[in-house]
Image 1 (cartoon, chains in turn green, cyan, brown):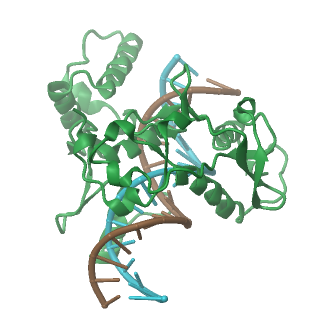
Image 2 (cartoon, rainbow, N blue to C red; image 1 turned 180 degrees about the horizontal axis):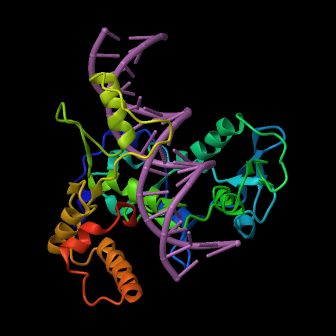
Length: 281
DNA sequence: GATTGCTACGAGGGGTCC
DNA sequence: GGACCCCTCGTAGCAATC
């Protein structure tokens, strides 16, 4: 039984949000989920910076293939499933406001435009006219204009463009809070929440520069175990969750490195585990 | 009603793999 | 070059509190 069934959901966090009926979702063969909300979609006009309702066919949902951003804004589902989450998780629905907030977020994000004219070598989004220095950044950005979400949540069906976003979202179901305050008993799902808490409640200011990478912590998404040491983390995963995808990724990497260095079985060597750079996982 | 603290999430930046 | 992975910041929305 997934731990998500045991998560106590604050009504405010989810109940007030609007969800979408599951039958309004279509699961594609590649395990992506796409809204079946049909004929009317909300479109953000980059020219007027306003939302408009436009007809839409599903064919136009391709990533960056059509001019104009399309966001689905289903308007049904009074009350939402927030009150039902404890009773029937199997009918969890996508939040209506997920799409709505997406649209609004893009409206708000459309305002700051640090660069208005592309230089040579820049890549411009044909939908929102944002400028990116690298092609791959534009390619990835175009996914946010698409309704196709390649990483669906197996609990609630909500889709994400990024695996990290999905992993982060899954903590709302599993209740795992890896970021623990050392000065009180509180724990948080995200580092920024902990840092905000430390700053506001304990007046502890982080000694990090803007966008500076923090010290890596390893989080077991199966049970919530955390460690700042990769050897401890992998030993835990190997002992408690031998089928973990994280472990399989680690083994793959070890196999790759073994083939490079010609060494024999070292994937169970804790010293080698410890030598694994933190960013490998 | 305003403020505060927290949750959740979108999305850009960057490193690495295939 | 695209995909993957992980990081960060910014912010909307909510409940609790003032």
